[in-house]
Image (cartoon, rainbow, N blue to C red; front, side, top):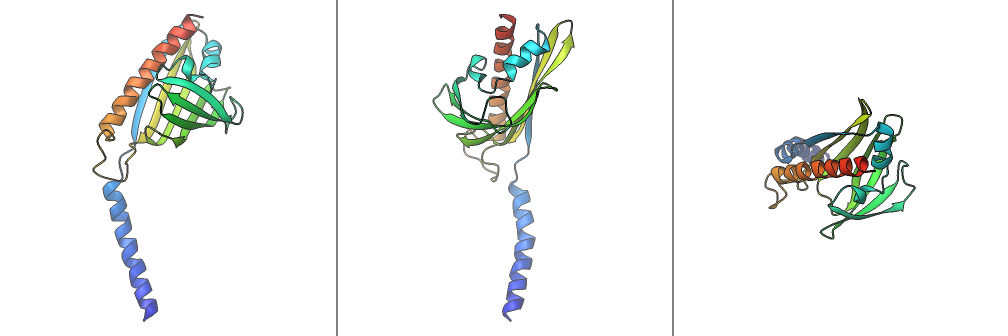
Length: 179
């Protein structure tokens, strides 16, 4: 009799779990921005690839420090302090200097999204210019609920990244072109 109850419980749990997860699984969101910079890719990559250099060209970041590993090496972890005083730790998870591409993710602190996976790429745009692409995929912080807390809905997180990424790229352009 005990075995039959365990089988019934397992069967019911298996039937309910996928439906519950499907009902509250927030969609994966994406942003993608690019800019053309009047400088060769190698010069632009030197700035973009500095994993600890974000405060130089992203105004919402007050400071950055490497807390584990070495700059420009996979596994490196930086701690960013935002202009509002909050902190977040990010890990460099892909670094390809031959492709002029890097990717990172949140690992601690006060993240702005869940499942955050941004990638920056520098490409040759011809005539001594570069095309810098900054894109990300992510979910809102409260991805497990159909009713997220105020300010944590899909539209709010999308709007935040759609403000920050172009601001960073414009500042990067000014920095590199001014060198």
